[in-house]
Every structure is written in C-alpha cells, then in structure tokens.
Image 1 (cartoon, one colour):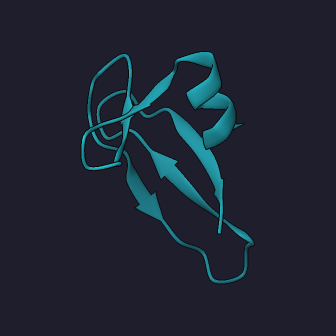
Image 2 (cartoon, helix red, strand yellow; image 1 turned 135 degrees about the vertical axis):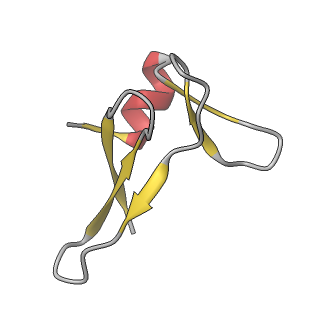
Length: 56
C-alpha cells in the first residue's frame, strides 16, 4: 500500500479544484476510513479498490 504523497508524485492520484484526492485511473474521489488505533487513515477508491495510507 503506497502513501498518498507517493501516489500524488507517481501520478496515481490527483487533487481536484476542491483539494479532494481522486484516483487517476477511475477519476473517483477516494473514500476515507479512520481507525482510532492507527496513526494513519486509509484512503480507498470506491471503483477500483486501490488503497493509500495517509498520515493524520
């Protein structure tokens, strides 16, 4: 699982005009899953299922 920063650098993700993270392949806004026991949240594409870690 890549980090969101690495995904942005590699072109797998892009930010739209509202600064939301979108999947470059599907152009869907990534969903966010928070686990209170972790120091990161998981961003997931609802279309293709790609997952990225995002530090909180």
